View 1 (tube, protein in one colour):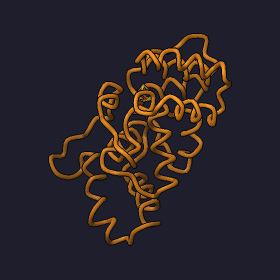
View 2 (cartoon, protein in one colour):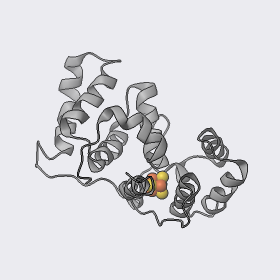
View 3 (cartoon, rainbow, N blue to C red):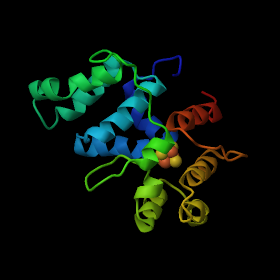
View 4 (cartoon, rainbow, N blue to C red):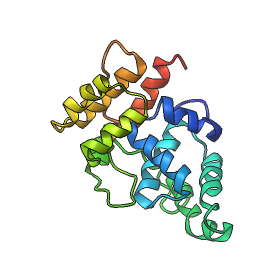
Length: 189
Ligand code: SF4
């Protein structure tokens, strides 16, 4: 975990600069749909905890989004418990660990889901469009796709990091939270 708390007001910006694709897509999904299914909430919720979003801010973030589509009572009844749970404050009181790439890559996503590793789950055309919409040039996209099309999702993710951070080296990516830390360091934060 990072030492300083990350305010939820900074998440829109951080999603663009420092989140790997798997988390940026979840962030965009919740902003657009005001809802994420359970596995996506676990994947993104635990990631947020790992980057330093406090329990109070997490509750506020999910409540503000979900109550755009449901009343506050339903949110409290159906969703709050899981957020406390993720922070080890309810149930077995286990302080859950954010998911690694290996776990995320294994999670199968269906229609309407946003969880999983986009390098694995998206068809190549949609992935290329997504990378283009995130500002990558055609040649940069080909560099990423070289690895993705061979099933090397984490190397493709490292290539994306290198290209978007003007990094001299390509970091080896095995955890979304490490990706975030590396990004913040590369940006001098
Ligand atoms: Fe996320 Fe890891 Fe996939 Fe990168 S390789 S998008 S960090 S799951």
